[in-house]
Length: 303
Ligand SMILES: Cc1cc2nc3c(=O)[nH]c(=O)nc-3n(C[C@H](O)[C@H](O)[C@H](O)COP(=O)(O)OP(=O)(O)OC[C@H]3O[C@@H](n4cnc5c(N)ncnc54)[C@H](O)[C@@H]3O)c2cc1C
View 1: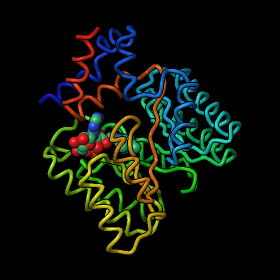
View 2: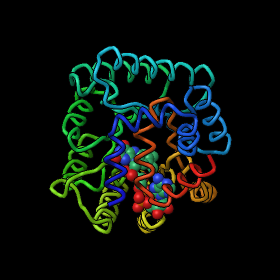
View 3: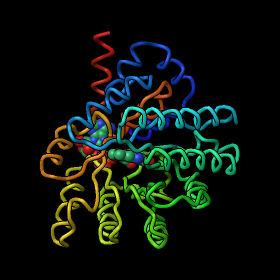
View 4: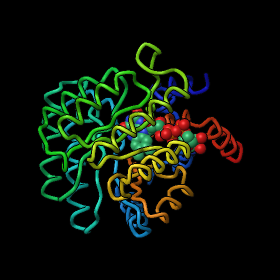
C-alpha cells in the first residue's frame, strides 16, 4: 500500500514543485543522486572509477512534452559524452526515451537517440535505454530496434515484474541485444505485472539464467542479496566467468554489497543519476524501501 502511494506521489506535479523548490528536498534526494550539476556527477564518477567500479551516467528527466525540451536533453547527453571523452573517463550513459520525446512522437525520440548513439560511437561509449512504465514498453522496444545501433553501442532494459518479459527477452536475444535485467520500479496493474514479490523474484531468477546462458554480456541490476547469490551460483555451476556479465546497482544503495562484489572479482557498474529533475527518481527509491521514508522523516524533524 505504502509503495503504491509513494509511486502515486512520484507522478504528482504539485508535490514535485514543492519538494524541488526547497534546499531540504535537495538534501534528502542527495542520498540517491550525485548532485544537480554535471560537475558533481563527474566528481562522483571519478571517485567510483578510482575505487574500481564501472559507471553509467544518467541525466535525470522524463515525460517531456515539448520538442525543444527533448532536443535540449539530447544536447545535454551529447555534451556529457564529449566531457567524459575529454577527461578520459570510461562511462556508459543511461537514457529515458520519454525524456527524448517518446510521448510527443516516436520518430523524434528515435532521431534524438540516433544522434546520441552516433556520438557514443565516436566517444567509445555505450548507451542503455532505461525501461519506463508498461504504457511505454512497446514503443521503447520499437525505438530500440528502429535505432539500428549495434549491440556494443546500444542496449535495453527488461523488467522481471512484467509477464511479457520472457517473450521479450527471447526476441531480443535472437538479435544479439545486450540486456539489463531489473525487477521494475513503476506502479503496474496485476493485468500486466506480478503483484507478489515472490513471483517477481522467481521470474527474475529464471530470466537471469536465460541471460547468463546466452553467452552475450548482460547486466544483472539488483540490490537483492538473494538475486545476487542466485546469479553467482548459476554462473559458478555453469562455469560462466565473472567477465561474462556484470552486476549493476544504484548510486547510494547497497554500498557494502557493491564493494564486497568488487573485492570478489565481479564487475560492478554503478548507475549515477544527476540533474535538477530528481523528484520522480527519488520517490521511486523511497517506494522501493519503506525504511527510506523513516530516514526522510528523521531529516524533516531535524530540519
Ligand atoms: C542499475 C539499475 C538500473 C535500473 N534501471 C531500471 C529501469 O530502467 N527501469 C525500471 O523500472 N527499474 C530500474 N531499476 C530499478 C529496479 O527495477 C528496482 O526497482 C530496484 O532495483 C529495487 O529492486 P531490487 O532488485 O534492488 O530488489 P528489492 O526486492 O526491491 O530490494 C532488495 C533489497 O535491496 C535493498 N534496496 C532496494 N531498493 C532500495 C532503495 N531504494 N533504498 C535502499 N535499499 C534498497 C533493500 O535492502 C532491499 O531489501 C534499476 C535498478 C538498478 C540497480
